Image (tube, rainbow, N blue to C red):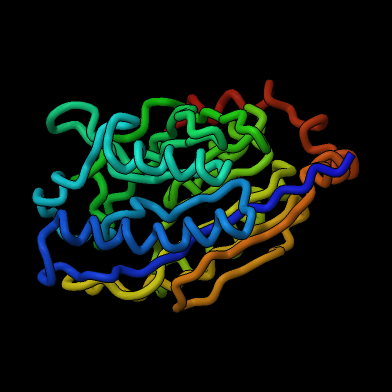
Length: 291
């Protein structure tokens, strides 16, 4: 049986920079810009759509400015999740919504809400690995995730989320696959000259090692006044053999759409029996040994 999926990724630049409006105005402008692409995805029949990391704000982590705390929302009660639940229902489209989450006053996570095709909120993933290096001062803004590596049985596929810096750690990708994920989405914010050479290395490796599809999203453009660098886009889909099957540009706001057959996972896992040949009883030292 063929299980064809049409999936989409949105890569997007800021329409309004810091200094051109208030924090709330910048956030609203970014949300409004994304709605155009969400409508396009719905009209083109996309079944599963993923947005970029903290999609409706700048990547504010170079700033260490507490004013960005104001952009955090509750999930699913907050206005962004609630509004996108309406769009998911309207288009019968699963939407992965990465936003800044507030769970109580002063406690924040880098989170992705998952909404099913009937508009129901299914749950969320909180970014587990939090960097704090060279302008990526994320520990100032986010607590490490505490929900493990959940997967979500949507109408169209079982999916997982693995956010940005997470991609440097193969253990979580393996757990997502073991938990049933057929597609893992990695919403990101990364700039040229930092880890660009890894962008098309690590995630195809995750796909191959685990026999899964991955959708990898990166924003585009420069974000002032921080001048962290150029977000280089190149969002892409990769199949279980590590082949990039659709890719976006380096500098263009766009919706990347890809059709693929989930049954290909079974074909690849039959050829490459990595799950059969695993030796988890020999890996115990991984959680005991200190670096």
